[in-house]
Image (cartoon, rainbow, N blue to C red; front, side):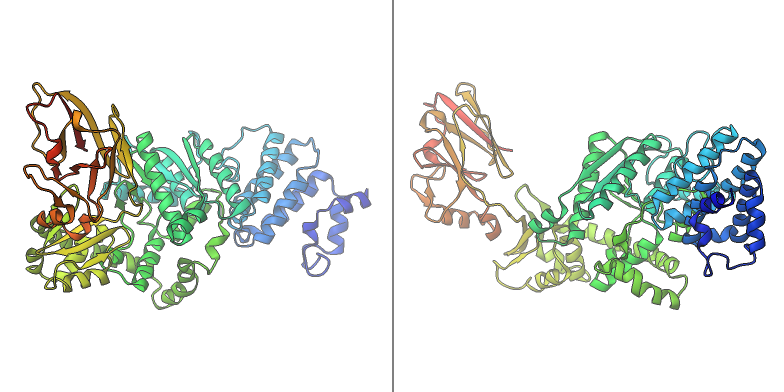
Length: 599
């Protein structure tokens, strides 16, 4: 029996520096006495040793927490019929589990954490007691109706703080709205999901798999899927080809992930009618974003960092610090996944977090709060500028279907012209440096061009003309007889045939009325070419299209967008959006009219 019990002792006992017996707890005499004790008393002795020796230290010692899990698994293997013995063991294991589970989760050892949870549940079964939903905080960490609400000194004030923040910034209505929560499985998003659940908000869960971390990413997705099921929340997941998208667009992997993520969130939100998309950004994220923007160069928008609400994206935790979230998670025994890439110095944000911010916090231990207050003041200043820019835009800006126009004389009369111009052009992708160049060109000759990644701006006489850049060139598109719609890279035409009797020719430049019997099908829509000519409506002679566009004072960047509709014999019947060819006009002799409308 002695040899059997020695072999049964788990390896965690042998973790000391001298064969495991490196302290006053385990002398040779203690060991002999221990082995001669009845099994129930042995379990009580071991559990008492764990509780007395380590106590709350388990929360900061992952190695000891793992040894404790091994002990509990071994101890629960005893088939002891003593009700008192199992009850005593259960009391100890529940107490120890409170400290062990959060630590195991902190280091990402979910296997050991699950094992510990299973042991604790087994002990409860032996006790024949109802199962507690939150005994250890892993397998049953998700709140149910009979949920464990955690320590009142931490839980309720934090819930109230988040609730007040939601109301203060009008993020959404917790009583009526359904919110799509972005959950990666990390600490921040797990806390966000739990907090909103406890506030009674109707939830749905969204998870992005970017295909960048192999098996770890797969495990994250499975973890979040299980989490959504336990919260009884609808689950949405998307698997992205992030690297391929980044290469195709010529952007960084991080930027690609961000673009894909928020675009998909909005698609899901619209498709299912969710009121908002909630992300788990907090005060430390705010500090990192402000400093990163400042490092790269930024204006007021970059200095105010992350906003509580941006369109339908809301950040309910932005008023909390990272330490607040961690304390909440540990106190409530929530489990999360740790992303190893968060510690990689390859990413700029990680280098800032791991190398620069610790130095700044040495200078100012209250750095996160200081920057949050600064962001609030900058946000107020930005609102003043925004209103001034809006007033200027009302006077200087004119939006047309084909372009956006800005009156140069109005812009020149503003204070800080370059700054105001940059705010007006920022939605079109123009940088501060380019905006200054544009402001400097106000007194130059017409025709000067400036490009952003998405738009082109041309100084044309007394105005600036902004048009989208056509990254995909128009090809040649055909409209067959009887075909109703033609879609050509964003340009949509609608054709319909009418009897001449009772038909009134529209006066809009976006609609052409053509004599159907003079046309030869299929009609072709194409880009105009140098050398093209037609006979403008009301003229007897022909005119080169290049001269016609000059007479129409079409800005240089809009000339590239001009399309012509031609008959099958090659004759231009309509310069789309400008003039019908006189040879195809509707007359009293016309029997059938083909109406072509640019939508």
